[in-house]
Length: 228
Image (cartoon, rainbow, N blue to C red; front, side):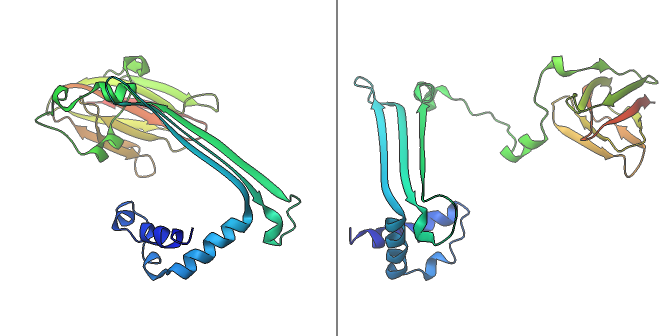
């Protein structure tokens, strides 16, 4: 189609591409002749291509309930001039998604909380449930643990603290595990590195159950003690 190079060029230079964090600086210098050359080259390499896109639309509610995309391409490698041992390669795949649950929610049914955190803060949230907790730590108690290739490479504990209570986390090991402390709301409040020190002081800012996580990415043994 002689109009295709212009359509592709407008798509590549659309400001929306920059919003997708794509490098558009080189796109601005493109012209239709260059795009046409790339399309001609692709046309020679691709001996046959099939693409389909289907939508399932509800006859009663007019909502989309399912969509499926399929693509198949037979690429002629001999035109590349390289001895790959293959004259052609076939690429095919399919993508299907059910979206009924998306359509069940409406804006009227969604309540926006009065207080919320930025989405980036989810990286500092400890996901899981109480089944993850190995033991409840007590002041003066020492817990001895180890990591091997068969472990999950982390041990999780709980400890109850009151606001203003100072404690010291004493993590002893011949290697270098990491120590993470999560507040009662499940968000990270402190991160300690054994490279810097074996003992880590901490003062609780609120009452509640804190979560302690010891983590490593290699085999090691350690002793963890929480002291007043």
